[in-house]
Amino acid sequence: MPLAASTALVGLHEVGAVRPGHRVLVNGASGGVGTFAVQIAKWLGADVTGVCSTRNIGLVQSLGADHVLDYTSEDFTRTGQRYDVVFDLVANRSLTELRRALTPTGTVVLSGGGASANGRPRIVGPMALAIRGLMLSRLARRHWVRAFTTIPPNKDHLATLRDLIESGKVAPIIDRAYPLSAVPDALRYVEVEHARAKVVISIAA
Image (cartoon, rainbow, N blue to C red):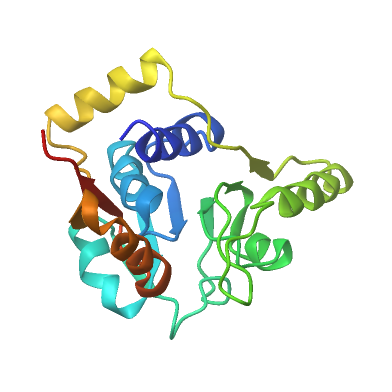
């Protein structure tokens, strides 16, 4: 909660400035941050589209997404739909493609690294995209790309998240739980099986 949910809250509420009636797309909607992002965007009053794989469609729908796109059969940058905020947690699209999905005043919010062609995590995450985006934004005289790194949550963030959890508006999603002795199996599952949401390590008292 303090890391993933806080990242979603900051990205949508503070960086993306999502307001009621906005159309928001979450790229990576079934991931650790994405599952929170879908729920928080709904709490903010947005019409939410989640992008995920075929096997995760039901999960993303259960989180409250108004629309779900299967990236194995649909390209959200080519559907003709336009969004006020594209929250990109995967970093697998070029800035040109992301901009194609925006309304004239829309914003791309970049957070998270995604994987390279060989499946390994990208160390620089979205920063290369962000730098190019800032340069293009200056040329266009409009700041349409915003990027942020994960930051420690502050007291206000945690208080907001506590209220959302206690009221039932947001729920953490756990894919699987492993005992401490099975940490290698847990890591293997995350790396190979594309875990949904979060994988938990249970530590007995």
